[in-house]
Structures are given as C-alpha cells and as structure tokens.
Length: 88
Image (tube, rainbow, N blue to C red):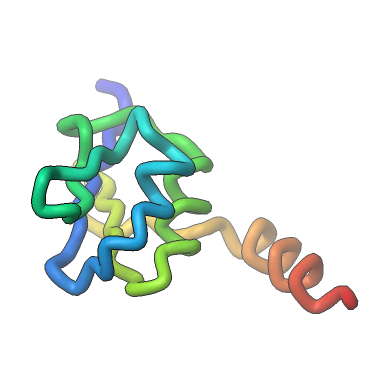
C-alpha cells in the first residue's frame, strides 16, 4: 500500500489564493472565493508542505492517512529554510 496524504483547508482560510496559485493541481477556489482541496487523497509531495507552510492563515493541514498524524516538514528542510530566510 502506498503512502497517501489528505489535504484539508480550515475555515480560517483568508481567501488569499496563494495555495491555488502555487499548486493548482492540489487546490481550487470556489465561487465563494474559499480554497478547497482539488483532489481526494494524494501521493506525498514536498510542494504541498511548502504551500501549507506559506499559508498566511495556517489553514492548510496535511494528514498522513496511514498514521492519522499531521505531516510536517523534515527537520533538515525546516532548518535549511530558516537559514535562507535569515539571510539579508
């Protein structure tokens, strides 16, 4: 059985559309301008972690369906990102 993630968008979504613009294969924007997952369970993709972390409302949750736990960035990737952001 292959690993699968579930994408959820919380009601706290501010309707910025950043996620739909960055990853249109995973997110769509409805007539009410709210973002919705564009697909059911999806294969793991590092792009999803980046988009979830970029959400200004922190409204995107990725869940590993095998464990039921939230998907988080790998510690090394998070450290590298923090280093890049700290550079002038």
